[in-house]
Amino acid sequence: MVILTWNDGDLLSRSIESALSSEHVNVNVIVVDNGSQPPAAIPDDPRVVLMRNESNRGVAPARNQGVGLGGAPLVCLLDSDATLLPETIASLAELATGNVGLVAPVFSEQHPEESAGRAPGLSRKAFRALGLTGRYASVRRHADQSSWQVDFAIGACQLFQREAFDSIDGLDSTIFYGPEDVDFCLRLKAAGWTVMQTSSATCHHPPRRRNRALFTRRGLAHARAVLRHVHRHRRSARTVST
Image 1 (cartoon, rainbow, N blue to C red):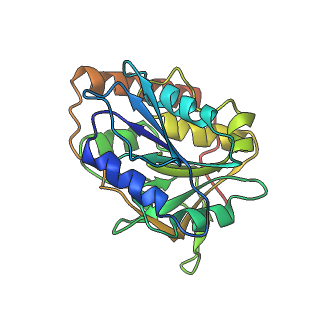
Image 2: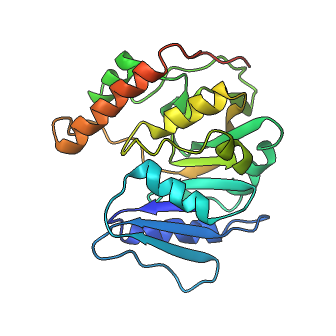
């Protein structure tokens, strides 16, 4: 389990506690502190390790650091404002076999399309940035399906095979902040891995914040990263079969 934190305070404590309360699996937690002030605090538990960066290195580089510190065949990336149910990790792990490289849950009290679906183009990203929609384009699936293929799932909770991660050299470390999660999933798919979402596993995570401050330094950096991402994957297949 890799949890990235940056000035998250009590949110981090709740996230770690939920991970350690996982049932039917052995969980070790690597916390990567991306330069929090004051530094992040972790519980006195041998299952939790803290790695601290003196400054904010960005999401993708820091998460790669965390994954590199471990050796388990399955890895879960978890946002510091997300909390797991006791059965979440075990349910995700059941599906992460064979060519299924990555599995993501449906977040509690949210539609599946709020956190996964077809790879977004510029128009979908613009609608979301402006607060006109909170969903991504859906994939075709049967009403009774509990698991289905998607192009991508957001990085708030992703469980993947280390073999899949290593096969594409992990997250793109040149991406400081977004959309490293979409890029990761699309590169997994291009390498022959399957990306799935399942309603048999749930996780608590707040809905995406609307009306992001687009014209801040961080917002403009994110916009540049999105444009680069869309150009990189402009020829990628953006549909999935079920």
